[in-house]
Amino acid sequence: MVEAAGGVGGAEAAARRWRLADERCELRAAETEYVRRFHRHEPCDHQCSSAVSKHIKAPVHLVWSVVRRFDQPQLFKPFVSRCEMKGSIEIGSVREVNVKSGLPATRSTERLELLDDNEHILSVRFVGGDHRLKNYSSTLTVHPEVIDGRPGTLVIESFAVDVPEGNTKDETCYFVEALLKCNLKSLAEVSERLLVVKDQAEPPESQDFKSICAA
Image 1: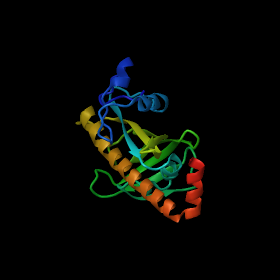
Image 2 (image 1 turned 120 degrees about the horizontal axis):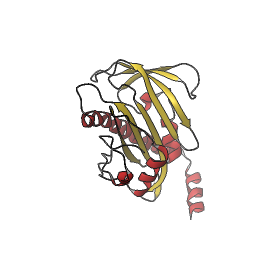
Image 3 (image 1 turned 60 degrees about the vertical axis):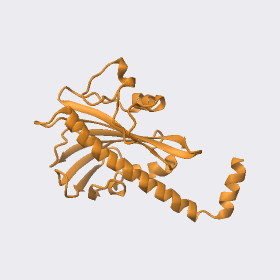
Image 4 (image 1 turned 120 degrees about the vertical axis):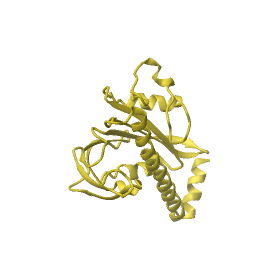
């Protein structure tokens, strides 16, 4: 089970308060189940762990097509300026990421731990770089849902990381959560923009046919 900020375990985890990208205070039932199934971090005493989520008005397949590009995190991560990766995208692949100025880092070396196109799971671990996020690991999952009567996507990203010397668990979680919230906000904007482009490019007769079928 992913830990809330502070890393305390126990059966009451489902009712814990989480700091979510959508500014809600508690996980809904479906989100709690997704966290239980897919976001199993086991932080040590010197680590913290938490999660953020975002509802995106675009279908799962479109959102996942952006998320799964391990070789191009700059597609939706605003703090990434450049990424280099050799070979094809597969478990064990390593990317070298350059970070934009303004953050306490310039580069990060990251390894792909899991890429599941069926369950829509992406897990990444930091294995080097000049940042302070030591032993950082994250899991991002995307799940179908309905938003305003149309196909939408729930994105959940969880993490575990060492607490740097001189910082508290809360401070570390707030910092990482702020980065992830920016990433998910950008992911929503990119995905929803792609959906608009796709809809505009689709022939009217095809849209009419889909409407008839839906009826």
